[in-house]
Image (tube, rainbow, N blue to C red; front, side):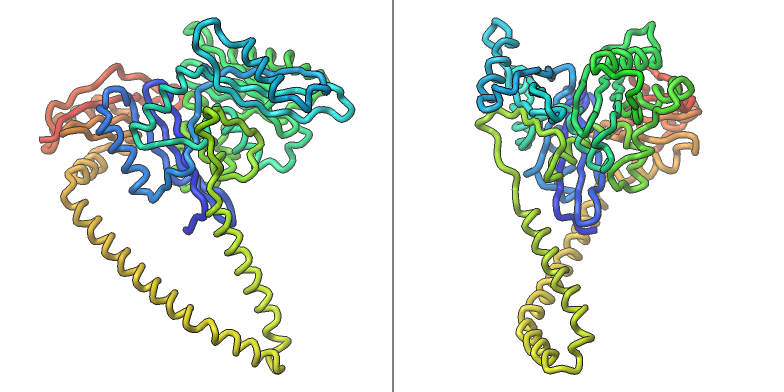
Length: 464
């Protein structure tokens, strides 16, 4: 598959780094790559940068269109209600409002805003305002620079999810949707109405509370704040995030209109990545924001001195190819009518003018195929020297059918694997008898996944 544009989303979620790639062509955007680096603070910077470099290099991804997502707890979102008269001086008015939110200490906010479409005849302006502390964002940007990444956009995760979901909903103009992004111990509920992000709030989940009660309470709170009346129609409640499957199991009988995002995922996705949709949705939304020319929610929290225009090469190539295809289709429609006329002779004469360029292009294609063959040969030679392949082969053959591996990391002769199994103790015993591994031991507690009944584990070992 040939892709014309590529976007990469990145999010620092707790102590994990998540990256996802979305690539697009004429037909549809596709979720193509995903990487989760768990417990990244324990890596030294060189090893962490190496893992990220491999993600970009091995998948042929560009670093030009990277979008950084800020978690909802670190992003302040406010909705400003202003008189219509301030429209001509809106920037200064919003800047004054931001100053009123800033703390008394020296730290301030980076911010961006987006006017929301008002009801026809309404003499008020509603402004979506997003803010992030300068000290927090400066620290994240400095770390990413050490890893060789300079994002072109910084936004909140719910903005990316909104852009991705609304792009596929051509009928969203007069409808209301709720989306719930459920993390490990928190939930953000946000609302999309008339194709806009009109509500967002994140709340923690306490140990005594189940997900269903939390979701129902947040929906009621949102409905009250949005002034949804009894005659208002809520089209759908969409669940995403790491804990979304657990939320769905607890709420599907009580709220029949809720569904998992993977049931209506707006991007094309390979079958191998389908099981990652719920976990990777937020970073997919960030990556989609990088490739879509018309995002529904335009927020960029980057400092003004770091903002840059999006690259136009992908758009130019797409436009050029579109013109070529149009010309080809037009030419094909004219061939039959002019086949026996003198215009056909003129067309053939014009075609001959392109024979030399065509031969040159074919020569370049042949050379490109030769270079690709050499690259594959070198890759195979390098892979032959990589002991990771033997370990991965062994794990593939050893894992029972009721077990699967979700994460594998290698660092200076030590490996860490994470996965789920219905027979964890037998699996651990098998690995401890492995001819390739030594010092096999579990790390942390083994937890049971309510949705599947399997035990989620993390095991560490050293390579013999």
